[in-house]
Length: 143
Image 1 (cartoon, rainbow, N blue to C red):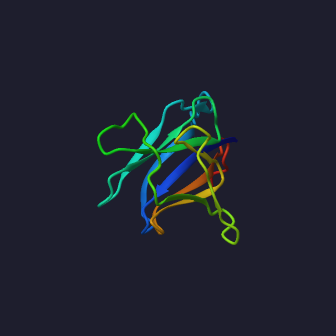
Image 2 (cartoon, rainbow, N blue to C red):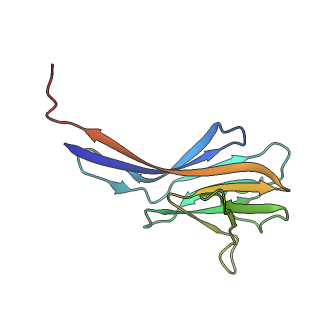
C-alpha cells in the first residue's frame, strides 16, 4: 500500500466558492513527493484597486506568503492598503490579527491554519489549508 499526501492552500471568495489553490507539495506516485518551488495564485476584487497574491516559499513545505499587488504589476508588491486586516481564524473563539514581517509588505501563511482577509471590515478573501491523504491499495482483494 502506498500512502501519499498533498498539501494545498485553498483561496475562497466570500461566498465560499473556491477561487483557486496553491500547491505546497506535489505527489508523484512513482518517485514520491516533490516540492513545488514556485506556485502562486492571484485574485482580483470587484471595485477594489488592489489584488492579493498567495505564493509558495522556495524550500519550505508548510508556508506561503501573502502580499498585495497593484492592478498593473504581478511581480511588485505594494504597501498594505489602509483597511486591510489579515486574521488567523483557526480558533474562531480567539481570532488574531497578523502583522507583516518587519520592513516588508509580506504576511506569512502557515499550513493547517485558516485565514480571513478583511477590507474595511468586510470579508473579501479566505484561505483554508488542507492536508489530503490519498491511499492506494496495490494488493486489493477483488470480490
